[in-house]
Length: 443
Picture 1 (tube, rainbow, N blue to C red):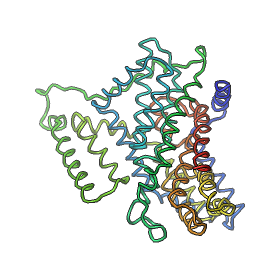
Picture 2: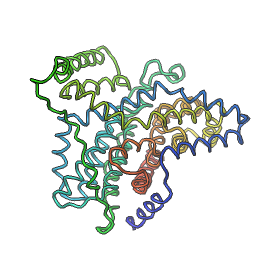
Picture 3: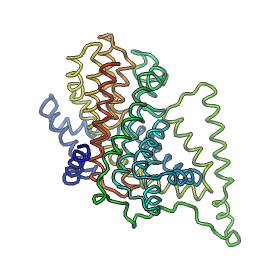
Picture 4: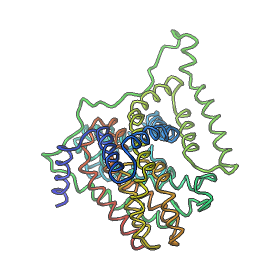
């Protein structure tokens, strides 16, 4: 039954799922129409709000692209790549590949959502090639979907935007709710229990959704693994500048410089946030790279993967601008708040965040819109503010399974289209949704 249901989702996605950029434009038009129809804003005012919002998340966009690009760099350095090849060699069956990659993606995402996207996508290709050489048939779209679906726990990990914002001394709601430590959000027993449940159930269900042998689609042989190792040159024919470019000492010095700063930053009380996390990955990339030239080549390859975000993030920022300025987002969220009590507010917050995420697929950007409304409601109703904040976080990440923005770099690495994995992503949406609903309703 599970295989038949998943097959239905796959067929629908293959026929009807357009490119992520098309989806972003379509959502913009839907939001524009809703703002004009349901709010006092005129069409001209709505367009103005879109234009003013378009560049409003530039700093956050840069941070997110760096998380993604720097994670890509670290994943493709020689030491990390050797570890990935070694891990692929432990796979002895297709089901083991599906389960193993889902678990690995989850664990990586708990460290960094950027690493959780990139490392499993790279490993999926290595694993698929390795298994083919040993005669193990892998359904490549499902394998890639396992890696992408496993990353859902990233908003409950060390790079979770909303908990990190609330743990920042000067966050914009500090006067209302004060500083909320990570022990009350991502390290709370509730959040840890949710992560453990996903780590157990999601890999098992996805592995059972594999198609029969005659329907298996293996990774195309033309999709050769990228050779991102540095090209070895004869040192005797190098110019002085080329020798400098190919020296590892340069990146080691800068990496050590960054490592010293990072250690001091945390020793004097600095907290883990997007900037400090990116600095850590800058340091790791520099220390693991073979030379300055190699590091630049890795960054250039990473830019190809992160590139689509440069147009899609501003599109969603513009969409957020329309929703915020017109009052559409407040109207939408307030509708859920109006039927909530102190006990049910986290649950309704979850649903509102899940739907809002389709239009604002950025945890930080969504918190900027939804956070003030939900915290005010929590204060008035006497609800648990950290739980409400985490409800926004898990609601936002829940529908990332079907919101294609974050799948773009994964698909670029894998050489697939969003329609190839969407059927399996819907299944992951159902599994994770069940876990979130039980956790928010009964715990």
